[in-house]
Length: 360
Image (cartoon, rainbow, N blue to C red; front, top):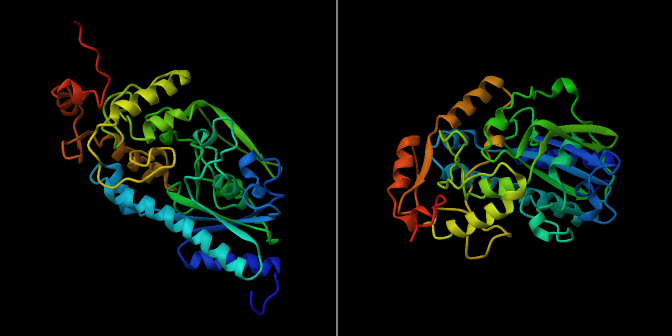
């Protein structure tokens, strides 16, 4: 920077000021050394050959919009806030990287979401990120893994978007958060809020980063999240609440059945009326947008345990979502939702639930 050397301490301090000035709630720094031994998506050089450090930061969601979303009073507010926060975080990362690039420090701002590696067996459909913001964040002390596998932060829980700037500069690494600053008590409300069953209720996975072990619940097939978070289905197993998806296709118990279930639901749901808003995802055809219908495990998790329980109660008492003919979504009582679906013509009902073929 003009008039300054590329001193690691000065650069690290500058990065924190640059990001917190624009609204980041937490900032930390990881290095190749503090990420050493991690999975492929912790490799900084994948996005920038010769990279030595990464700046991690978190930006929170609007809590009022979260309240409306979980209680099924308003879908659009959080959806818009979520997308815009992701775009803002991506822009903020690119902004810091561009600043450093103009001062002779090669850097890359990693997009917050929706970038997948093409060099895995299934290509983009394996949904392996170019760089895991989660791994960088826990190594940098921005947050830590909750039971859900989401990164939870001290001020805003898991309700944040993570950003990363990778650089060839040598920066001063932050320490991972100590045990006493980690509030996850494995209450399992994250698991209770997941209609897909993505998180294993008993088994755990662990990851080694810089000689430290971090653990969280074992993830089952990611096709579970594709099916539910993709908006194709969302009815809870007990039938008493749903995500914001109006679909009620079955959610298999066996992971091996998910690919077929996902394809069937994708095809069957295609004629549904368009929901207001939405976004284009690289795994979907350009003519079809998807909408945010879940994310509950992230939104329920709050630093205060009583608030966490309150948010969970909002969700499980929010009713079941049905779709009106104009595409709008409406939460109603479970019995009313079931009745409305049952009264639909067979071809319309087939867009939302599995319909047995008529016997000849």
